[in-house]
Image (cartoon, rainbow, N blue to C red; front, side, top):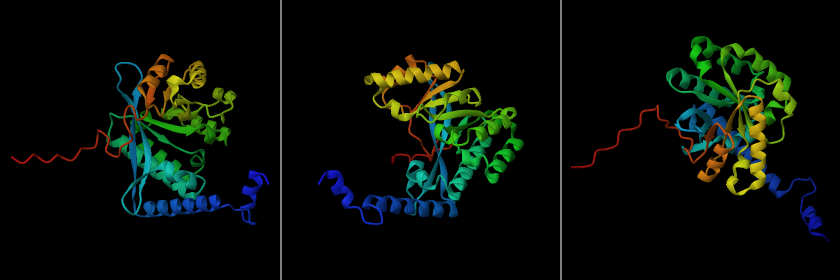
Length: 280
C-alpha cells in the first residue's frame, strides 16, 4: 500500500482528520477570545513606522494594526485571530473598532499620518461607513492624513464595489493602498479602474531578497508596474539591511519592517512612563 493510501486510511469515515480537529479547535478558541475582548473593551491598535526609503529617512506614516488582549492580559496580534473571524460579523466589529480607534488617534495627533487595514466586506457595513463619515465631517484634516489599505485578495472579491467606494471618497482626500501587491489575485487591467495611490509589496518576496535572483526579478517587475501607474511603492516585512539596500536601488519609496521598528502599543506620541530615579 502506498504512503498516500496509508495516510488516507487514517482519516475517519466522516472525512475529518486529526489536523482538521486541531484547526477547528483553534478557530473556536480565537472566536471566543475575540468575543471576550470586544465585549470587555480589551482592544487596541499597535503602530508600526513606515519609513522614507531615501534620505532624510524620516517616518512617512504609521500603520495601525488591531490587537486584542486575551484573558491573561497578553497582547494578541491580528494574524492569530483574523483568519477565523474575517468572514463573520465579529470581523466587521473588529474592523469598526480599528477604524474608530485609528480616526480618534488622527484627530488627537494632527502631526501624524496613519494607514488602517480594511476588508471589502466593510464597504457595505453601515456601522463602519457611519464611523468613517462622522469623523470626516467632524475634522476635515483626518481624511487628508488617512490611508486605507485593502489587500489584493479582498479587492478582487468585489472589484466594482471597491471602485465605487473609492470614487465616492475622492473628494475627502483619503489615500488608498493596495496591500499584498503581487500575490496573484489582482487582474492588472483593474489598475486602470481603481484609485490606489500606493502599493505594498507582498511580504514573502522580502525573504532573503538580496540573495534570491528570482524574487529580485519579481520585485523589479512589480515596482515597474506600480511606477507606470504613478503609485507610491512600499515594501513590507523588511528585516535585513542588504534587502533594504536592494529595494532602495530598485526604486521603492517606503520601507516597513522590523529593521526599522516593530509594531508597538506605545508609539512616540503617547507619553512614556517616567523612569524611576536611581537611588542616591
